[in-house]
Length: 256
Image (cartoon, rainbow, N blue to C red; front, side, top):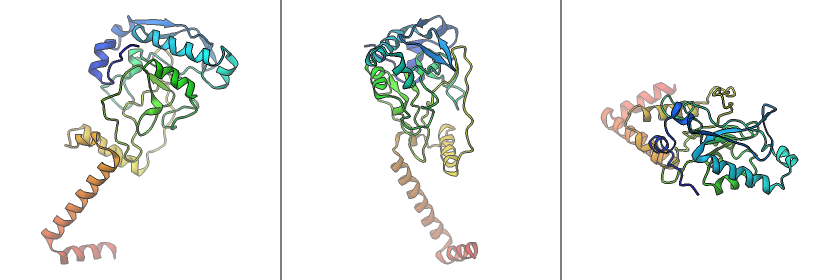
């Protein structure tokens, strides 16, 4: 089995090449063993990176054999609903990080029932197992918000997952839902809740050099503990600096 690159920009670039003309020169056609459809139209081939094409072919063949080479079973389970592979774009929400679709190293299946943030969706376990046997990473295993339509040929071991505080989304919410021509369609998203706005503020502070980069390496309960401890420390300092009588008076005025 191929040793896939770590899921970071440097390793992906070194293994697959630079998204754009460099990657496009390395794309080959993968012909699925069963009929696939995109928006109801037959898909004859899937453009995929030559280094991952054999693994994709093996996974699809494994799925086909598991279901007895029965197209009706494949259709009934939604496995034939192709939702995108090669697409030279950045990760949603990032201006710098390339999507794994941009390397031709990721594929999405049945986006309708396995959308971003839908837990494990309805992706059949035999499909998940077939891809994992080839070393692929499944988006349903993401910490925080999952991406169950998504399979990518990279290695996430040894890298901390994103903090799950307040339902934080997976950093690489990488599902495509577009065609191989490069266009991408995303469903409309509702206005984020207060909790998610707080989460986004923390993520933004972390990424802008606000001194909180260590939060990405902590679990959610550790982050909560740190924030609670910081709040308690600030309360003690305020009482010590202004005096308990002034603090009580200020609080009384605010609640009255």
